[in-house]
Amino acid sequence: MPFTFVEIEEHKTRKLVLLFAVLVLLYIVSIIALVWGSRLILGIERQPSLGEAFSLVCIAVIIAALHWAVSTYRLVDRVLTAILAKPLDPTDTYHQRLKNIIEEVSVATGGRYQIEPYVMPTVAMNACAVADFSGRAAIAVTEGCLARLNRAQLEGVIGHEAAHIASGDSLSRSVFCGLFELHEEALKRLTGVFSDSAGRRVTIRGRGGALILFVMAVLWVTNTAKRLAELCVSREQEYRADATAVRLTRNPLGLAEALRLIETHWRGIGTDGDSLSTIFILDPGAQYLSEQDGFFADWFSTHPPTHRRIDALLGMAHLSIANFNEMMALHHGKRARQLPPDKPGEVPSRRWSVWLDGTWRGPLTLEQLAGLESLTPESWLRPDGEQAVKPASHEPSVLAVLQRRYGHAGQAPQPGKTECPNCRLQLTQVLYEGVPLDACPACRGCYVMPDQVSRILAREEYAFSDRIKRLAATMPTLSVAGRITKRFNAWPGNRMQHRQCPKCGSGVVRKFFTNQYLIEVEQCWVCGLAWFDKDELELLQYLYEEAKAKGQSTFLEPA
Ligand SMILES: [Zn+2]
Ligand SMILES: [Zn+2]
Image 1 (cartoon, rainbow, N blue to C red):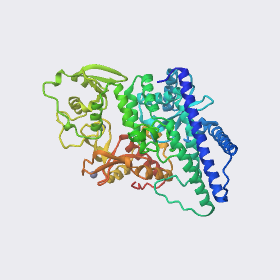
Image 2 (spheres, helix red, strand yellow):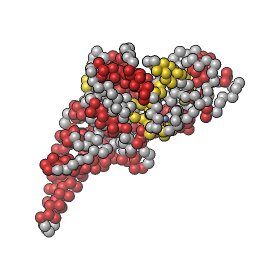
Image 3 (cartoon, rainbow, N blue to C red):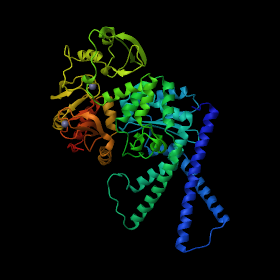
Image 4 (spheres, rainbow, N blue to C red):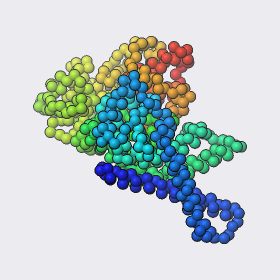
């Protein structure tokens, strides 16, 4: 990667010149179309002279320069406003953690930039970086990320964003965003007509109709230009920023875990700012193209497929690709019993290194592993003598140890008994607010039928954690939530290919549970059995009780 100061500057200038050239080209083409059109209408036959052609080009350059000047003026402020970012609250511990990490990471990148920290008050999972010509740079992270990511994961995300800023990618991306995406966003908001591209019909009538037609024309032009200009925002930058983040944090696993968590959550599609995809760590709009491989996608998409980025990161943790694919397949819910069982007699001699608190410990024997309090089914293990990394739950003998710890003493895993989709432990029946549920003893997620949800909600709970309260505080109004849930639930990428409902065997989709609140579940589309992560069910309870206390309607509309 080009990373001396001079190289960065050259690289940056090249990108910016390219962007300006695209802009000039856009206006030349538009002016030619305009002139040609009016000549046809007015019936002018005379060929334009060279001088006239030259002045047209000059006009195009001037308009482009104006567009550029307007678009890059106070860019950081304008982008932050568009994504509704807020300054940190000095009394908030989560915000202070973010501030500390950003300070540490910006020192590690050489300290050329004073990176300003911001939060986006939404339960979505995403983060972005912006920079402008005045030398300002900012990183904004959503409340959803602050509440759900641990320190190592958050460091990975910040490292990635700081790498974009230090390499100058952030500047060209922000300019790109200012030239094209900000206008798109403003127009969308001005007219309100494109807030849900899926479905709502636009009636074109009278003066309002003319405005809508005009807006559509402008959107079409900027969109076309945007596609062209996206050629300058290459996918390679994402891989490079991931690699730099690993160098800064010395922890590829933290960023890999963070990407996976962000990927499997709602990233902000349907909210204000979702057309500003270039500056985000993962595309909020979940564009189809972003998750594709191949020539066309490589050229015209700003983000590489997330699985390829995780590939690269796990490779840095000495994980072979074959092993990783196997692991991902397992993560998507293939059963433990499909793994070849360990040969008896071989087990006591095996040893593993375990990734705990940011370092590899070991190699340890099974007994030593069993003695580690902090070992969870999701801890990373590396079998001694191998380069591969896998979660503890994918090592049958270690999983058995964990099963014992969580109260399945002496039980061999019973085939057919439901497992946790996250950590593969056998679920135990617990009484949750008096309702019997299959819950995971480690991650505390659980399977709930829709009628059980209403029973749980009817019983009051008082002790809610700080995390739950802060996630609840970011819930949008009912009408905004309705718009978001509709768009997210309609997205085809939510279908979980490798998962089956444990109750009826039908397909499972990722979706929001109700139209009113942004509570994510994995739900069977036939019988309605829903898997709630621990936070999500508590969040629903909290919101329900809040609504009840305020005397609002507590009826949950199924989404
Ligand atoms: Zn679990
Ligand atoms: Zn089902």
